[in-house]
Amino acid sequence: MTRILVPYHLDEHRPGLEVPYEPDLTVTRELGGGDLWERVTPLYADVAEAVAADVRDGGAPLVMSGDCMVSQAIVAGVQRAIGGPPSVVWFDAHGDVQTLETTTSGYLGGIPLRLLAGYRPELLADRLGMAPVPEDRIVLVDGRDLDPPERDYLTASDIRHVFAAELDTAAVPDGPVYLHIDLDVVDGAELPDLLFPTPGGPSADEVGQAMRRVLDTGRVAAVGLGCTWHEGANGHAEQVRAALPF
Image (cartoon, rainbow, N blue to C red; front, side, top):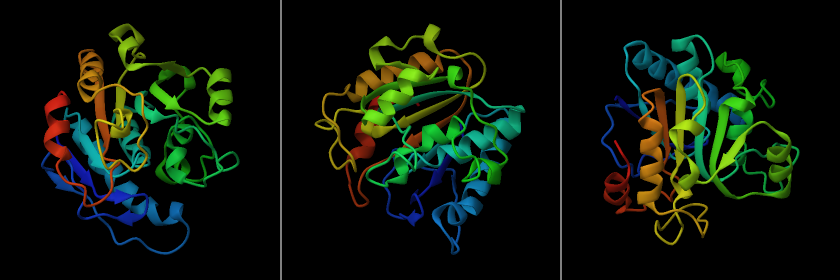
């Protein structure tokens, strides 16, 4: 498992981002002008190529970053290597299925799963050569903090929504899998300094056990780990490393 670090939160470089594992490769780039989508595209293209190379070599890379948007690059890279979209198992306290039209906060970190499902491909998917992941091949794990538009979308969509304790191997979609973990899926009382802590979630150990059930399928092609805590937060790495099955 090649460990790739992408030390960014959206287009903000966070060189001091704490991550639970020592990276084998760190991907950075001087970001140009334009809007966020233009700025991150070259960075994500580099990440996608690094992921694709590792998958082609038989690896299952672990990509660590400060947000969930890097998932676009990871899935694009897996697609390049396997010739089509992987299934997605998405651990997150939030739905990440907002749109630019429905978000009230304007926070772009709330839309990456919706992007993977085919929303507004001109923003990133077309730039990265990425096909949409069919909704019936996506599982949202936890998603306990949803805005009304997200609830409406998930109710009408073919995305499966389960809690960590309910996730077993039978619930994992067919084919190669992209396994995504936003660490804010862990109960906010247990993991301090998260950007968006949410109470009432599973423990880190419970998340680790559910992840193990996905890994036990033998079909995980890549893993994305969103270390979504404040830069400068310290002391989390050992706690997370003890709970996660890597």
